[in-house]
Image (cartoon, rainbow, N blue to C red; front, top):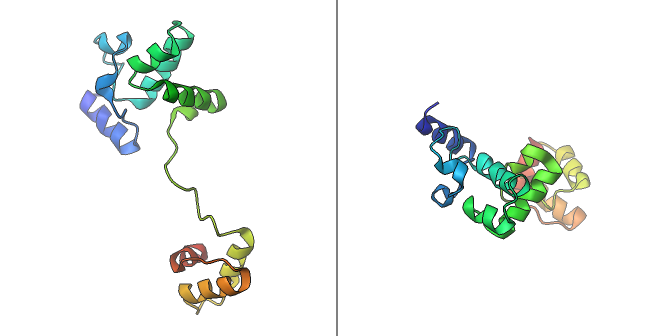
Length: 142
């Protein structure tokens, strides 16, 4: 696989290191095509390995892999909890509607299908005292 196609694959998956030019660790500058500074997961793993196996300080390992000391600890904790999967960044943002509880979702799904999302949102406001956007109601009905 060429470096170009590898980068394209990483970009499609959202796995490109944000600052590959800051990766100065020896394994990445040795000319071995296996080590790719744009591969965020590989860089994170090698950063942890440099600290644990090679004995580099946290500050040195983080800096030579293009991360801050604080980021090192976030990566280390994620790896500790989830292993390799923990090296994949979570999607930013909320994980779902905050106001849509189980009871409200059941109410929305049971509401008359002929009512618009805005009308059902008004009924939710009256019954539960919770203000929902009509699109939240429409998505919950799917």
